[in-house]
Amino acid sequence: MIDRDVLKKYGAKEISLAKENVIFRETEEAQNYFQVLEGSIKMITNSADGQEFIQGIFKSNDSFGEPALFCSFPYPSTAMALEPSVIIKLSKENFLRLLEENFEIHLQLDQILCQRLKYKSMILSEISFYDPEHRIMSLLKYLKDNSNETDVIGKAMTRMNHTYVVPYTRQQIADMSGLRVETVIRTVKKMEGDGKLQLVGRKITL
Image (tube, rainbow, N blue to C red; front, side):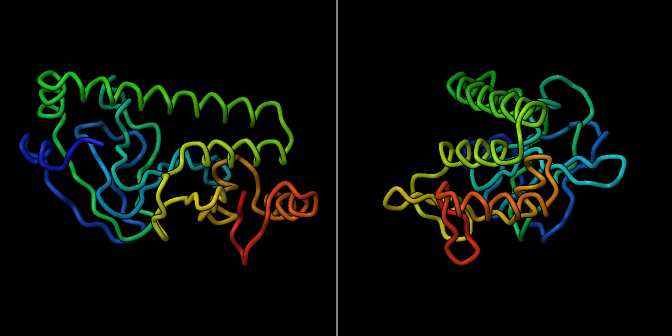
């Protein structure tokens, strides 16, 4: 999102992460801006009974954790590497200076945060009011609409010849939709039988 060279000009540092390395934990104070260079990062919260809910998955060029940085409240969720990844970290002070001196970047970031609010609103409505099939289809359609236009094997959703391939596991879809994995498996199979999606190998396609 923000050019790597621009971030480095303001003092950003690159950090390599192994799978499941934690970047920050829920309740910690936000002190840095983070952006993904390679790999993918998930933001998660856990219920009282230990069920994980994925608040978002961020891939190459995505930033994450900004609301806590802007509004000076503790992180509401934990950020963790989904796979070996490289991120870039910039101190809060230098990040705010970057935005002050680069209005076009500030505006671009505002638009991205608005899209995330739209996603949060959609997920909250789905969890509150709709059955599993509707929740899963709404999530998949949202991901498709916001997917990369180019094929990045193993890194992002792909759109090739109008076919959209979802690389997330059934467990990750469950964690993003607030459902149990058994419910996702059963519902996806039914949706395939009804012709609402296809299974190619174990991959869901729309």
